[in-house]
Image (cartoon, rainbow, N blue to C red):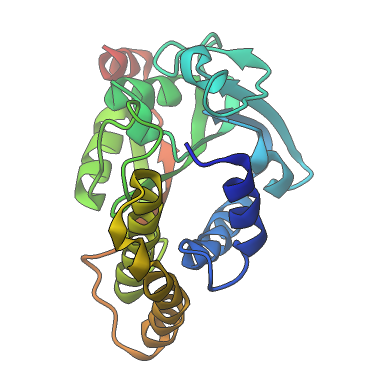
Length: 252
């Protein structure tokens, strides 16, 4: 785990191209676009430190939920309640909106969590979720899977959702630049921990990061995009208007 000094330095550099994840800043624009149209009672599953609450419109009433085994130890969570995403302690059709941001990859049973989300959402209620696609393993050992857009559409349909729309978080060139910058920075950190002789290459690698970031941003704007590559997706879907018999089948 990085030292407090390294974490402080990384935080200071986050808004500059010197940071290996500088390009991720653009993801917030996609997040905010999806959130600004929500209203009503809103459940945030895997809420962490409640960072999404400040991005919701004023007419949203926020409720945060997190899992005790990871929320307390990894994420400094501040939920209203701790619970398992596949067994939420709420009645059917309680919420107008439900958020799952950067958590579906951490669920052992993502299908069960999506079905439970459909259960607690009101009819035609809105689900907004985000997932990584091309991104390093993180929060190990609780990182279990990656999702293609086709797999997400399939799983959402099976769980009881319809009207699925998708936004890619970064385009192909930006994703390649982001992945490369993270790989360069991580190599330097590992060499530092191992006190490897290859540390003599560290200045050149670190200087390559802002170059890679800026080239990724510029060419990502200028060049045609390749839809098959992205670092992640933001998905919006509606709960199907189902009868009780059908809904029970989805949750079974």
